[in-house]
Image 1 (cartoon, rainbow over the protein chains, first blue to last red):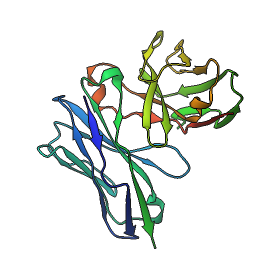
Image 2 (cartoon, chains in turn brown, purple; image 1 turned 180 degrees about the vertical axis):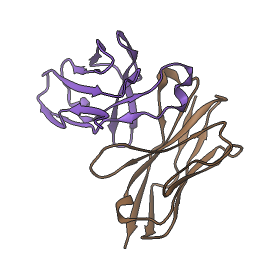
Image 3 (tube, one colour; image 1 turned 60 degrees about the horizontal axis):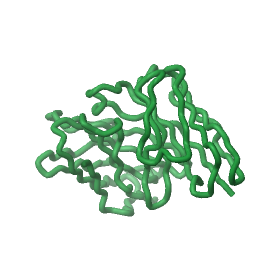
Length: 116
Length: 117
């Protein structure tokens, strides 16, 4: 079975500061991918960043980086220089080589609020 | 840059009515799927397809039908709407359906907000 845990229901950060959103996972798959999605209040699901289980370096995409610690089974999202438009729900997700049905397993999400 | 297109954006149905949620992607993705998102339940997989002519059930398939006659389209049919089907529905697609799908992100449509009264 595969499981994603996001322990922070809500996070607050001031504009221009960095913020880390936590994600831990559990899987018996040796090969898997970790993903972060953003869901603004408008409702769409926006893919942000991907980390493969065999990737040696942490993934980065602009202001987003993924702090991947394989031994700890954690895949935290770091947003640098937060902007007001970063306020949204953020979901951590995983897809394993043996993922049943090709399914993406999601955590329950973290609501990020950026204040001026 | 259309990506995954879902229609309609909003829909209100009466109990017992049927309807089809449309989904189309222009990325030549093999894998397509339907999720529903409910408060406290997260996203749950309804049906999925690994290619034209091939569909299978997800974890919550009851009350829904799908078909995949082309690579591009993957409509979701509600056979007889029930209030329990009030939800936000997402269509999502990705590059591969094989064992390497784990490194492919799912690309989501903008969602359909369905209310059944």
